[in-house]
Length: 452
Image (cartoon, rainbow, N blue to C red; front, side, top):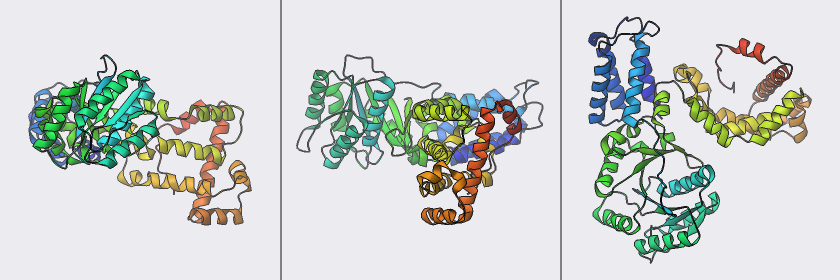
């Protein structure tokens, strides 16, 4: 997300280096580039105009502190205005209501609404310790009801059954009654979507809304539709009082126009970002963190939170003990690390959150991809249990068999063995108290890809 915008902004800011003061003349071209970068990112024109005007007003004539370059001062201004445009801070769900707190989910067909209901249910259950029930009022697509039932089982929450011959309002009311009797904390109500906005659709969801009086009404929208997402959200908000937005499919959105437009156009906060089909692929929306990522400054806080939530702590503790005892780092350990990396969004997802990674040359970025990581895992899976535990026994004929099983060349197996050997040596140095020395050696060095 925001790849193209980040690249454009990084290039434009470079033009300000060497200037002693920000003036209207020396930022004119930069502001023009910022405007073009935002338009190419499919940000709505009124939002672009307002954003550029605010940046210009703050930047022109600003004295640059002795410790800052004009480029850094300009980055600070752009960062502040990006945060302001997207909503200042994360706005959590308001679930302060007599249980069950009812959350109504609205949106067009194909936006990922039903999947988002399951993702949100899982998030509320695992991070907030809530008892959650889900129900589908989409009587027009029986497959949607079955899909939600399957997903509810998968994430371990209660499912209230419904059928195509029932009235959506009656379903919602019955679900509330059932959730109350079962002492559920939250009820998530999935509604029918349409391929486009129509009067019938709006009328039905307004009837459901009036009947159940939800504490939260979330609009689920596909981020890849750009500024159209913001316009659609506005139409819904005009007919239905929304409390927040969920942006889906952000992993496939390289522009980010929806995230930068929705708050300004609707006045409603983005509360969650969805990325991918997995049920754990939903995160609270933090404008300040996203602004940092747009400007190539990373998102270390989100990375830390993600590590806390998704890393297998037992495996991490086991590896730490192994390192402390000076034992080697074998292929089982390497496979665990690679799989945990993939579980946290892959190499691209991790790099996106690390400061400075946005400034890496494109040829270096191209080498850092999940395809190589998956191939490395495949090579390890082609090994026997003994080969994984004792890498030194992997010689000529074994290498050829492993390469054939993984569909790679022998050179690829050799390269992976070399990487494992280097990591094992590094672990032994750590065990010997060489951490400070190793950090000094690594200072300033950047990774250059997995080598596959």
